[in-house]
Length: 476
Image (cartoon, rainbow, N blue to C red):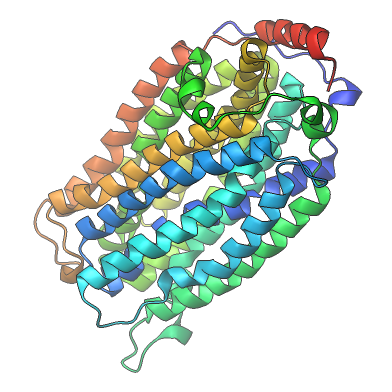
């Protein structure tokens, strides 16, 4: 891990701050398009509509099969698009508008349906929605990988993105509190969570449309304007997955993403149940309010995590930044056993904040490493395949996250938990949830360390790669 500090950024390599901010706003559509639904599906379909956890988990797993097709397709087609607006921005605009309009449709069900009817509605509606989100997300992720050739400026770009991402994350934490507001109570005084979910997604859908328009108008496609329009060879659809997987540093990066994503994606679901049924004694409204406060803590402390690990990356290299993330994460999840406790309810705020601190550092560093891998690939392939790598990397990441989210439902059932029992759970059910919450992420962090050990792209090697590329095809 003997990386040296990155060199200072040349003026021509800098990205204007307004473009960094506009690009960072895209995390609104990324987060709400991909991860809002898995956050809201449990209180709506399991707690309110009483769909079994295993059916909810299965629906979430199945919709990732859609990503297996849509992500590579939109990554490939955006790599090969040539238009007056670039190759990424048209898809970003269209995908944002359609995703914003369709977001409320995810919860357009009626009480009284059968479990099977709810299940198939979840599968079909989320499958259509995720296809639309891919239209935005693959070009969006690809765009970030081509905005600058500078090792150091890439870290800066994804620091902005990681910090801004905390805003849409708060909206996901606030979802449960919003859905249980008293204005949505039914005639008996109980929260009508379904009506709250519909209202909330309508509001967020409008914001998604506005964000897409901002990105389209503000962010520029540097590589398209200076390099891609001259590139005769087109990327083949098969390159979107199999050819990318032949690149060794990319495989190491994917190993980190898969291990971290698979193990930590269970936290959102299990953490919500810990807060509501263990810390708050089964009071859904109270637990949802605490969940919102935890979201605020996650935003503030998560931004600090992005800034802290960005500082390490700038001064000691991205690999050392990632090593710090994974090492500190082990202690964070060990601490979660003591911070989720009904004796001192507010301690869970520090649990959520410290987890967000680690997550902010991981995803910022992971994103900043991806353009380095793409430069490594260009040296051997002679092509700029941001869309291919973004599609493959994002799909593997989402597969890990989806498997973790899906496994959360089965883990929940394995403990004997039953939402209809409220606070009167079977002996050992809540202890089982606490053990799952602590031990699974620690195991994932250990596997991610193996992937990091195999990632060998240092700042010195990347400087050599850039020199060779610019000698071959000129500067960008």
